[in-house]
Structures are given as structure tokens and as C-alpha cells.
Amino acid sequence: MTELLTALRQIEDLTPQATPTLRYADIAVVLGDTDGQAQDRLTRLDGTIGTPWSTDTLAFVGTAGRLADELTRWRDELGLSGVRLRPAVLPDDADRIIRNLVPLLRPPAGTTAHPRPGGR
Image (cartoon, rainbow, N blue to C red):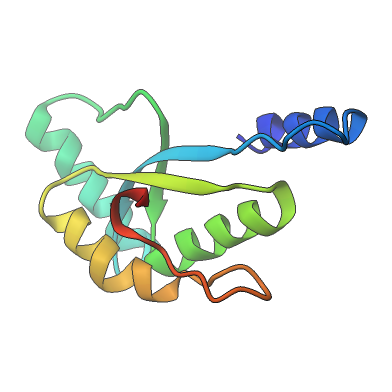
């Protein structure tokens, strides 16, 4: 993902008069209180479905804090415009996104913007 975002930024640098491209990430998430707990949850999911869990997009397995740091870094360093988070297990991961991740997300420096549900 970082390679693609970096390439888009380099292309934009070559065409400064063009409208910047909005960059959105699509990420499936398995969250836990610790990285180990998130990995254990993924292992249990694999066992429940009888095969390794897979997704058609980038997958993140870890803590809400680590995901918040990664999203912030992608925004600040690579120009990420937004993200769609796909909970691996409902309602567990959706609850963790709301309860643990959203409060950690920081608006860009110099703004008062806050995350909006559904990108609205």
C-alpha cells in the first residue's frame, strides 16, 4: 500500500496544476487488547471457518493503538485521504473500532475535523 501511495504522490509532484487525487484505504481488521490477543482471535477465526481467513483487501491484525498510529502515518506521510474499515468479526471488531480506535484518531494538524461515520 505504501508503494502505491508513494507513486501517486510522485505523479502529482510532476503535475502540480492537476487536482490532487484522493486516496482511500480499504482495510479488514482483527483487533485485540494486545497484538497477541488479536493474533489469537485470528487463529480462532481460522479454526471456526476451517481454513485460513482471507480477504480481498489489506488486512490488519493488532491493537487499535497500532492501527491508529499506522493510519495517522499514512495520512501525514503518504497523503491518505480516508479509510474504510471492514470488521473481520461482527459485532466484535465493529465494537472495538468504535470503542477503541475512533477515540484515538487525530484530525490533521491545523484542522478541527473529526472522523465521520460512513465517510459523510
